[in-house]
Length: 364
Image (tube, rainbow, N blue to C red; front, side, top):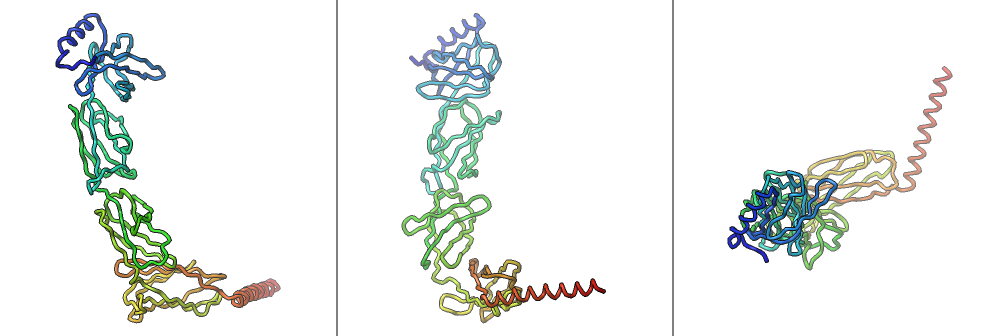
């Protein structure tokens, strides 16, 4: 039967004294102040030893070493990993205690999508547990640092002085991210990102949701069929955000003349949903080999000249920043076959002219 320290203290003391007199080395193990029965499997390099633990006592007389680098204590169908046990000559006491962790998100709900790391202050070894599988640990008494990791990033740091069976309850700055998008006819995808995280938002009822998101500032990207909206959003609770695309911006684009290998005038007009020109919008137009940036005036227009190059379809990306929201419109400007023939003819004529000039120069 299992003995408690109070009921068997004198008996244990007598047996320890006898063992000392006999020159035996003992490891006395207790869990939550109760001496236990089980087996201790010791790993030293390539060798493995198994020692019975009876009423908390493991006899190590046959083992000639001063420390145990790794071991597994098996009791009550539970395996407890142990590391770096320094053995004294004669008797070494090893007190283990149960610690239960309750990890909650900012809304007081259990936080399951996380890991717990426990590290003793005097050693470098680490216990890492997936909290979806276990919230209970049996570890030696002492002082520990512990960390809660959510999506591989620390969301809580704490210290634990473990000298009795303990319960640790922590609340982390983590909650579900929810957003409701209005006025979007066809949503392609949505996600939030910052310098540490990236989450794809999934449809859940009327909302787009990402679970267990650490609090902070995120860039929300909403990809619709004909444009992409980008907006910075502060995430500090599970309260749903609302994005209304009913007042989104529109663009009108013209390229004239759309001739390959020629300079063309590119005009972009920015307006709101009902066609009213938008003033003071920052517009950036990106061509394959050229960028142009300007601010719209009262008429909502920007205009510039650019060399089009040689394209069948000219790709244009138009970025608009207005009232803290960023839009991206991608367009393909077709170059007519006649323009392409004209361009190729111009190239051939130019090359022919260069060859004639070179030949005459060589004759001189």
